[in-house]
Length: 221
Ligand SMILES: [Zn+2]
Ligand SMILES: [Zn+2]
Image 1 (cartoon, rainbow, N blue to C red):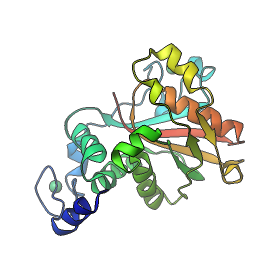
Image 2: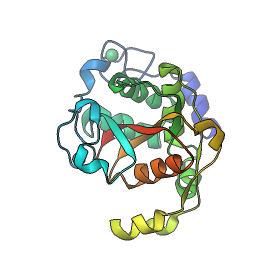
Image 3: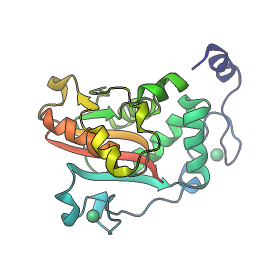
Image 4: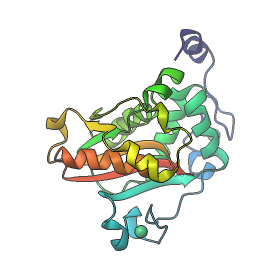
């Protein structure tokens, strides 16, 4: 975050988007009312499942056991995601992580953020998934480990999903393998679109020896 933005953030306290009280973008009292919880479904086919589990039919297609989705991409969730990406990411991350934490039903051993593409990182100066992961780590009590890396992928823009899948092969790789081997990993990202990126991250973690991979996102597009 640029120094001037940090300074403004320091001087002007956050206010709740709903009631206007000072302290955070979503105060504890308002948080439950600001977001419609997303119903529990399989992230690939939208079939109803328990605890956001991947359904039996889709389980063959993905290494992800479940993808928790906190809210629908609308209203306050959309506003918080926008602020996370473009404006004062740190405090929006705190509120979104609180929403995401409420959905989790299973324990995990490590929390791993989805790595930003180098182009996005250069534009923003921070990776929003890292901000979310750090907050979740504090709330959920499992360590935050940046166990995935990504080579530059600006060529991804404007290509269809199939060729994107091909291009992504090998773009995401595991590092710090010792910290994920045999562990139950919780992957973290802000918004789920096609699921391709989460899938690639989970595949890399599995190759590194992760016992299981779940994921949590704030919303689904
Ligand atoms: Zn409030
Ligand atoms: Zn399914």
